[in-house]
Image (cartoon, rainbow, N blue to C red; front, side, top):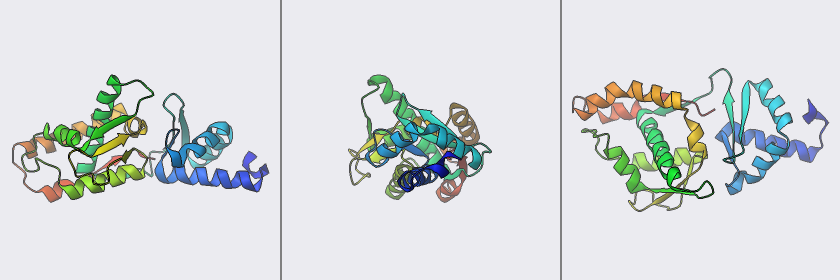
Length: 213
């Protein structure tokens, strides 16, 4: 491998970039703590592609949106999300798509907690009509870890709290995955909306496999 012939400084940069991709899935051109890694991978894509191919991953570069990602070739190593986390991921991606249509490609996509709550409210889940503060905070923290978003307001439970969405949210779940997850959730949501299932804890504990990694 070419990496074995490189200098110690190069190997250290390579190691750091690889570990970031393995742990957070996405490197973003416009995110301060991943910008240098993004350009390093871009400039050395052949070496990274060779390395990740041996690891069983595909290196995916979206230069037009400034996103670099890895996907597992065998569908393993995926993040398990709770049902409510899956629902919020889908809703936030929908909000990203709606906002992006209104903005230029260079503009940042910023939403508010109120917009998330309103979008969630359209599901009309009788037994859980509103997102509780703990669920909201924990889910935002999880998505922030994987470079999907960044809260601009410390207290995300405030209705006016601003949250910046990164273009990586667009790649976190494919169109096929959205269709599959929505189909799987349909019966569950129907039971909840009709009040036929009042066990909120069960809803929170159910999980779906999400293709992060």
